[in-house]
Image (tube, rainbow, N blue to C red):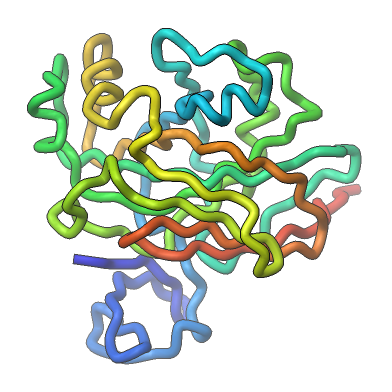
Length: 250
C-alpha cells in the first residue's frame, strides 16, 4: 500500500493515490497541488549512514568503512515533498544525497539478519543534503553538516514492505533542473539493509517508526539557490524540492 501525509484546509490527513489525485482519509478527493505534503512518517530515532556506497567513498577520496558509519538526525531536518531547503549564505558546496529510507515497523533487539525484513514496515525516499563546508571528516560527522532545519526532504510516499519485492535491487536517480546528475542502485550498498538492522539492534532497541537512511551512491554536485532537485527511487516515488536562501533573523 502507498500512503502519504498531507495538510489540507488546516487539518492533517492520510492520503492515497486515486485517479491522478489524492483521496484523503475523509473520502474527499483533492488535487496534489492543493495540499501541503508532509513527511509520510512521524519519526522516532533517525539513523543515517555515511559512506555506505563504495563508489561514493571513492569519489570523496575515503576508504570504505569496515563497520557501519552511523550518525543521528533530528526531526527538525525533515520536510515534505515540494518543500524548500535552506542554503546558508556562507557555504560553497551543498549537495543532495538520494537515499532509500527504511521504516521500522515493530520493536526489536538483537535482530538476526535472516529475520530483519520481518521488522520493516516499508520504505520512502530521502534527500539527505550535506554541507561540505562544515565537514570535519567523514569518520566524525560534524553536527552542522546533517542537522540543519529543512536539510532532509522525505516522501512523498510511504510504500509498505509487501509492495517492494527486493529493496536491495532498486535504481536511484537524482535530477537537478531536469538534468540527471546521479544514478546508482541499492545493490551497491556496502552494508545491506539486513546487516544494518542487525548491527543497530545489537546494542540498542529499534522501535516502530525509527527510520534508517541507508546512504547514497556517487554523483554529488553542488546545488544553488533556485535549483529544483528531484530524487527518485524505483517503485517508491519521486521526491521534489527547491533550494532557497536561508532566512536572516534579526
